[in-house]
Amino acid sequence: MSDVGKDAIEQTWDAVVGTARRTAADGLVVGTSGNVSARVGDIVLVTPSGVPYDRLAPGDAVGVDLAGRQVLGDMVPTSELPLHLAVYRHTDAAAVVHTHAVHATAVSTLVTEVPLVHYAAALLGGPVRTAAYARYGTRELADHMLTALRDRTGCLLRNHGTVTYGNTLDQAYDRTAQLEWMCRLWLTASSVPGHSPTLLTPAQLRDVQDALEGYGQPG
Image (cartoon, rainbow, N blue to C red; front, side):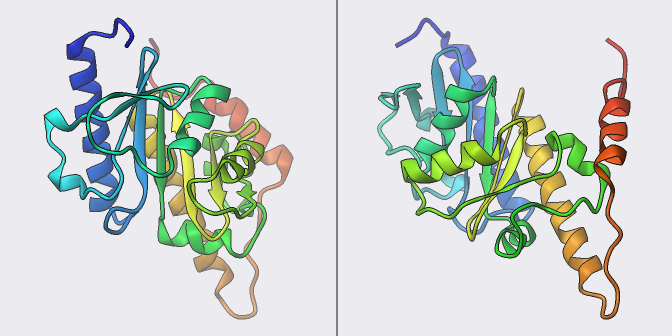
C-alpha cells in the first residue's frame, strides 16, 4: 500500500460516504444504484457493491490501487470499478460520481448530445455527449465513456445514467446536479406542443466559458 496516512484515508472515506448518501437523498439514485469514489494518493476509495449507503460506517472503507487490486477493506468494490479507474487513469480527476438520475437517463435514450438549452453546459466543458451503450461493469462501457468525456468533465451513458468528475467530491457532485437539472430543463421545454426550445450557439457557449474563467471569489 502507499504511504497515504490513516487520517487522510478516514477523511476521504467519510466524504465518499457523505456524497453517496447525498445522491440518494437528492433522488439521483435509487437503492444501491450509482457509486462514488475519490482518489487519495495512489489509492481509490470507492463505495462497495450492493450495500445501502446508510449502512456504511467509518470502518468500512474499500480501497483499490489504480490497477484495480484491492488494498483496503473486506467488502467487494462496486461493479462499476472499471468506469471509475478509467477516469482516474486518463484525467486529473480526484473524485468521480456516477448516478442513475432520472431526467439525465431519460435524455440518454433520446440524443447523442444534450442540446445546448442552457449555459450550464460550460460547467462540464461544453456540449455533453452520450456514450454508446454497453453493459454495466464492462471495459467496453469504460471505453465508450472515455470517448464521450474527451475535453469534458461529464457525460451521459446511454440507457444507464451519468458520470462526472472533478478536483473534489463537491465539484464532481455539483457537475452531476447541474447535468441532471439541464436535462430536466430540456425535457420540460421540449415537451410543450407546437414549440421547440431555442438553443445556444457554439459561439455563445464559448463566450460563457471565457466569462467563467474569472467567476467566483479571488484567491
